[in-house]
Image 1 (cartoon, one colour):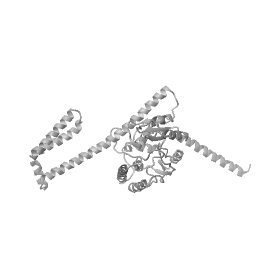
Image 2 (tube, rainbow over the protein chains, first blue to last red):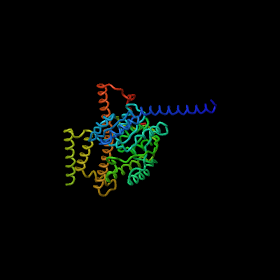
Image 3 (cartoon, chains in turn cyan, red):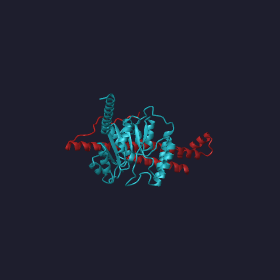
Image 4 (tube, rainbow over the protein chains, first blue to last red):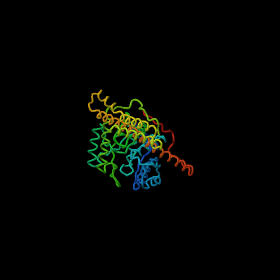
Length: 267
Length: 133
């Protein structure tokens, strides 16, 4: 065998080794990752979402049943998910945060949050996790700025201006959190938030964590509609709430330096 | 006549507060503040001249405007304190609902594992200790 041939063989072996290591890492990362799916009356889609996440190699799927009126919990359990039934409706963020707290209790390294309405592409979970494990970010947001109505885009422009956040997709609930980000988001400060979008991103930013966008293709909702952009009154409340929060948190924006005074009782 | 009405209102409020505490509808902690307010109201009703003299010292020609301003300011402060407390309670309530749901799931899974032993994928390596740093 010539020297060139041997060099070529070494290159192939090195390439294969890298691929095997990458595959092993991916498998390991999936094992220590918890996929959290908040669900409210999603009986039509929850089974298929859980099944497809499991098929994608994520063994740990947690569905937070946000006090649904239908049999979402039952179907999710049948599909192989762990189900947490909330005693009362806490909203998408309250449910997602329950999942983050569960992840801390069980020692997971990362969490992916995704919707139960088939909007978020399951195959992109792996990409989110890869980006997270690269160490470049503490939170990776699956972004699809093309989706949504004109109204939503106007809202985003205003929110970006108020918050100073330079993200493509501010409202996406398709996110991957690393261990540190999970702890921050699951803290009592996170429990004061009503929505999962701006408040959580600002919380991460104030803690000095890195949040990045990762473009993904989202599907349009097959059943139901947005929990926010469906009624003018709710939109007005959401916008006022979000703009006020953005502006208040932006003033003196800097990482938390000293531990804040915590409430006396942690629950 | 107005001083009498003010005093009557103050005394009535005080009586209602005592009744609410007696029937366990109002916590004593909250009752203290309300009782003080009621007695101050009654006292000022019986002796309106106190307010007049304070107003004169402050250079306010119309004494009742001082009473209204002070009263309004105290109400605003009270409402703000209540909303701060409500925010704290809401946060604690949310966390309690979350924790209860998590524990319920854990109990259910332990019971399930006892009846049909299976390999658990996740391991309980740490407890949830929350930091605020």
